[in-house]
Length: 410
Image (tube, rainbow, N blue to C red; front, side, top):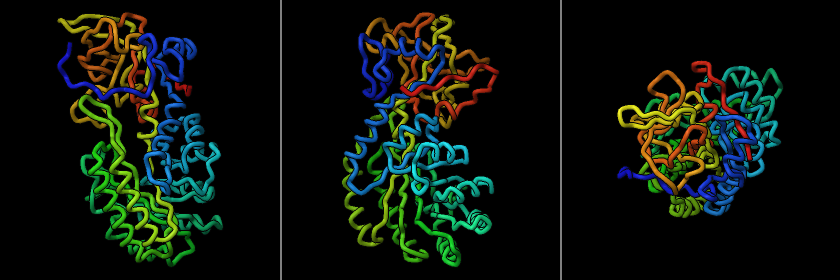
């Protein structure tokens, strides 16, 4: 019916009798088990498969760390902790969840500007690695460590003088609140060398959500070269080099899946060179969205069906207060549709062009805008795919006082 660009094939979940299966269970049965809509559901097998496939794709010797900010649900973190080599947190709350998961403190890092003294104290006491974002943050960490009698474990987060081209969110190049400008890092390294702090290495993160292998290769090459230069003035040998992530997933019409073949080949060549120049350093890739986004769905129920001047609206019990990103209000400049399906008519049956909206009193409350879906009536389930990252915790649950959604890991 529609001549608009289509989404990349969604292959992470099976479909039986035209009904989506999550965790091996038909979605209508899962909804009955959960007991209410809306809810988020995360498929543990899909997460396990993604990490396994990534390890198969990457060269040996690359560690995989999970950036919890993508999805800090404790059950998800517990599951991921058994699959990956380390965790990265962005708050004291996330740190507590990470420690509860059983991940050794030595494999947990803490990144983010504006770490308060309470956060620094908790991190230093736990023995995790602080990714330093500024000179001032280091001095505060040093004072706190002295008071605790614990040498802070630190790495320098570098704001490089390059960016990850074509990335969804640029984290480097030019003025940034993240990290220490590359040209200032030597001064911080000298200061670290004057103290009892335990220097571990560098965190160089240049961007996120990238689907272009050539851009990732260019950024990784520049990252290694920058690390080599900075290592020459480091206060000790590098134990770790976090080269960030940036691996994207397809969300919108016209986007295709990231092919890691060339990225992996280039990274393999770089690893050998890195061992020669830096010695026995752990090279790690830090990923969040790439590991969990495609393993999650957001499920809501149609509560009304109406036609307004020729356009059919499916009004649901979910919306932007639960899934801000799918509404287009979480960083999109021009709104695009997430992949959305009718749970019991995923591929076949009668098709129609509809808009899916929520119950909120705002025209921004849109989950799908003029999108071709399987026919849905009141009571049917609507599913927003690619919802395992930056969904539940990135949304304004208190907006207009509607109930918060549930989360389940299946």
